[in-house]
Amino acid sequence: MKKSALTLVALLLLLMPAKATIKNPMIWADVPDPDVIRVGDTFYLMSTTMHLMPGAPIMTSKDLQNWQTVGYVFDRLTDSPKYDLQQGTVYGRGQWATSLKYHDGRFWALFAPNEGGAMGQTYICTAEKAEGPWTIHSRLRHFHDATLFFDDDGTPYVFYGTGQMCQLTRDLKAVVDGSDRHYFQREADERGLLEGTRVVKHRGTYYALLISHVYAPGRHRREVCYRTRDLNGTWEKNVILESDFGGFPYIGQGTIVDTEDGDWYAIIFQDRGGVGRVLTLSPVRWIDGWPMIGDENGKVPQTMRPLVSGQPATGIVCSDDFSALNTPSSASNTPSSAPDSQLNKCWQWNHNPIDEAWSLTERPGYLRLKTSRVVPNLYLAPNTLTQRMEGPRCTGAVTLDLRKMNDGDCAGLAAFNGDSGVLTIRKQGRRYVLTMSEQTVALSDREKAVTSVDEKVVETVDLPKTETLRLRIDADFNVGRDVAAFYYSLDGVQWTRIGTADYKMRFDYRRFFMGTKFAIFNYATKRSGGYIDVDRFDYQRMD
Image (tube, one colour):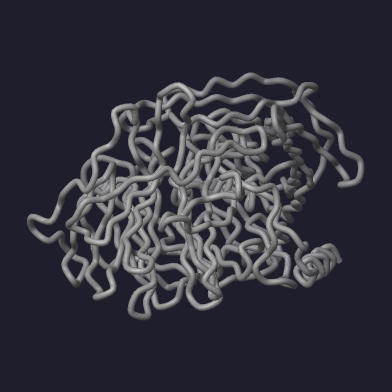
């Protein structure tokens, strides 16, 4: 009964027409480093998800309001055991700032992990459909925050770093000798990097968009644009956006995209604390040949009209009863033991999953999470499953069957980040104990190895003998809030708060460099082999 009820609710929500206005942020969730293209009447959006797998998510929309995740470029990365939480981690590293293009009937994606050595080599991947399957086409040297660009005659280029570019061979497998150069030099007060390059060509002019960090009085983070009509010529510069918005800091990096009717829009991220880096939508006005972003005052607008009316309401965070068996949509050139069925594309694992340790088929209608190795803490736990949180407020609740946990096993739900609020069910002999704790991880600079986890237990509850337990986290990302509250329930009707004070969620670029996520986990501290069955995850976003 519960399965069919959840399915009916999801169907009704899907069939509801979208609201008449787009409220900024366009996506109030962690979707940093966006690249957006249009193919026909469909917009395709790509973002950074770093240590989460599968990676390089692809989202689609018809109206720049309703987005859904349709695929990923890769299931996993395999250049190092660190991707498997072995010999270190890749927290805050992994896939960064993917560039997405459509050329000669194929989709192309370029990204470079933020790593040194071979781990940091650039991937160029390709697919006939954005949903996949994708294959690795080539590996090149590292290009920081790069964009792939095809000129009108098909010549490929990479723009990267702070004003650097090079030409690629026609097969996209090497850099043309002698082509690497700087095409601009930053201003004296731009002491930070100019990052997140995105390049478009409009009416014969090349435009390179970058985020600029300035440290002069009265000037802020801003989006700048360089333009030229000759790639080998001189580039001019202009500031195309310098705007705060909604009580949060100044807008960051992004790109511009046109519609079928010839209008242009900008998708630019903004740092919003604990929820991460969210996406804003603004009109683009072409003034004196420059793509000026924002309304008539050069500011990000509060609301905008959707491009197409009546589109189904969709989102990139979702409820799940684990009944659907989705087929894989991404592929790689590396061997994988991934099961024939896949999770809903809203989910991502923390680092590479151990495929033998999870199942949607062993108990149909449930997600089984098995313990596969003994680990000391949550930050080294394999097969932790995550979804984004959303603002302004949201709530996520999970229902767990605990009967097959082993002594020493820890399972639960977390507001997961470098600083995490954690609900943990611990099996102690035959007893179950629920704790709400605040956990902070310390990572080494080079290997991102977990050197320590500071755990402050806020409250502990002895649970009565029970087969199932429901855990819930409520999050508030309004200005000045960034707080979470934690609850548990034995029957799914009466909820009891655990931990008296709101937990403060934080964004930390030195460790995770991403917004706080819902995380469902199960790990062993004494012996592997136990498991939990996840019955459902219920999610709601509130304005």
